[in-house]
Image 1 (spheres, rainbow, N blue to C red):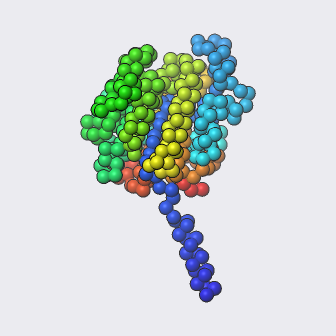
Image 2 (image 1 turned 90 degrees about the horizontal axis):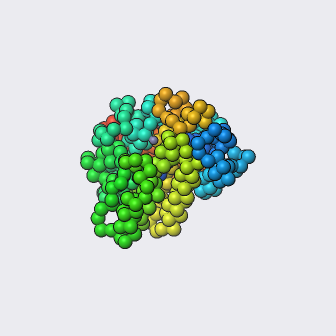
Length: 361
Ligand SMILES: [Zn+2]
């Protein structure tokens, strides 16, 4: 009897060690284009906050984002990240703890970055931001071929190159990017958001609408159609950084944090999403250091521009908070991770980096 009990007991431990970790039924991905890890983990940069030669308003930055302590500063900038995600999710990429998260592709700009995130393949042939239909298969496209995800997948972005990155023509995914109107049977609210995007300032001259338009069009679609896979591609952070507007850059990051909170609150209060949805947040590349105005730029001539971060919260993520262990991960691991969280394996025709394990340790 004693022997049987101990056998049963060891069997129990074996089973629990290999038990299926919290499986997700839905995945939401949000990206903030070129938002630096330095701001995510340290809040407003002290050099840029007190740069008296700056063309942007350092008064505004000091008033809204400054605190002497970096922990207080990051909380001020990204309150949802440092309350909800830090306590119930995971944050990777704080290089102060040698926790590294990088581009695996050698280019460190947008199209190669988004290609790497969603196809899992840091393909060196993907080397421009031109509107070339992506030959690599993305994980949304792959999953959308399965009956449970068919027609329940949507891609929204501020930048009009997402249709090419996700190869809209081949993938058949719903893609709404740039200044395109959402089509179909629309609610009054959706018609209003379609119109508003054209009434807002064309601040970035052509191919990119403001994130306020993208977020609202996408969020309303999410509420109306309850997709199982949805992407919000936000871009204001990158545009304002290139323009040298550190005040607007921080403002855009903070607004994005508020939108992410709204998405999470909606998920956790909606049957079908609640406790079944993992939210992944990341960026497509990093930027340079504050000194020498390199923070405005990225690409592989800027030494630090492959340094990035990622965060996640949901049933497939162990609540380990800010990761402080020495580690190296890549954005190209996200595609396989998305599939694994759904209990699937991502097996396209091209190579794929291995999934991250966010539900152990
Ligand atoms: Zn970018």
